[in-house]
Length: 347
Ligand SMILES: Cc1ncc(C[n+]2csc(CCOP(=O)(O)OP(=O)(O)O)c2C)c(N)n1
Ligand SMILES: [Mg+2]
Image 1 (tube, rainbow, N blue to C red):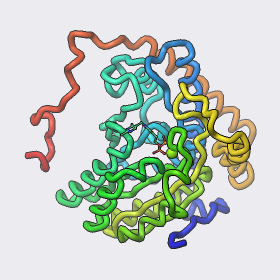
Image 2: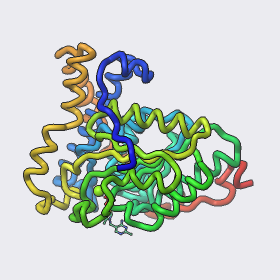
Image 3: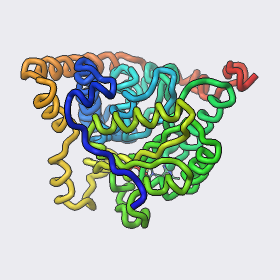
Image 4: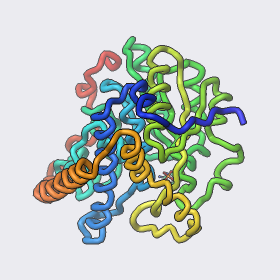
């Protein structure tokens, strides 16, 4: 085995050294609870017939998504995927806009042009995915190249799934990033399934992070249910990239705790696997850590869950009030014109 396996996070002092105070920790916990809450409500909306198409969830991936996003700087950019609702939440997308997106309303990030998962708020440093197999890795690498050319001290973060690792664009992105030592961090959400395909039919190496060495940069495997370990590794990788140290590949290991999307009941995943991984639920795990290491009280916990419930109830009502887009204007805002691209790179 070539790569490093990240240690789990231990004490509060270790976490403080990594730059997080108690308020930050509670904020991370809250973001994870919001993330799950959005996805649980998405299931209900779908069953009520209010969501056309499907609804994708990242149950089991909340720690990974929120942990990485918390480690990014404000000016950094990322390309989160369908398992990474926590990235949108942690970067400040208001939940009502996510519901509006899924219901195809004009206040969603795509203003009703896509009633689905291809969303991102570019004002918050995110680029919407066009597909995820893994079309966004070359985009993230392109951002990193642009930062280098413009002399900007920014980092790009690109997500992909372990199934997507089998496709050629993963190789092209990583090879180019390694050759140029670009400021990019690759996050492999390894949730052990690509739709119904298990990992032994996807790759033959032990860890996908092993491949980093072949591209000329560091790889690390982290337990994706341990939010603080994810944060620590992501922070390290982001700062390394920012200071000219080149890319890092972080393989974040989880289990996709639901079907590919709400239309899929995941009948092909062995029951024992779900039972085993349910013991490591990222939210419960972090709650226990906070109780043991940061004196989280029952009152604080109740306050957070009541606050999130209120936030999401209001978000749902607000999203339902958002109008559907006007049919006559549907083609507006779909393509960028050269005038829209007001960046030094495009001039
Ligand atoms: C080129 C292409 N083929 C198939 C699909 C349909 N599809 C979307 S996600 C996915 C599975 C991806 O698995 P993985 O990369 O492990 O990500 P996960 O969904 O498990 O997070 C498939 C088959 C697609 N979007 N694009
Ligand atoms: Mg997968």
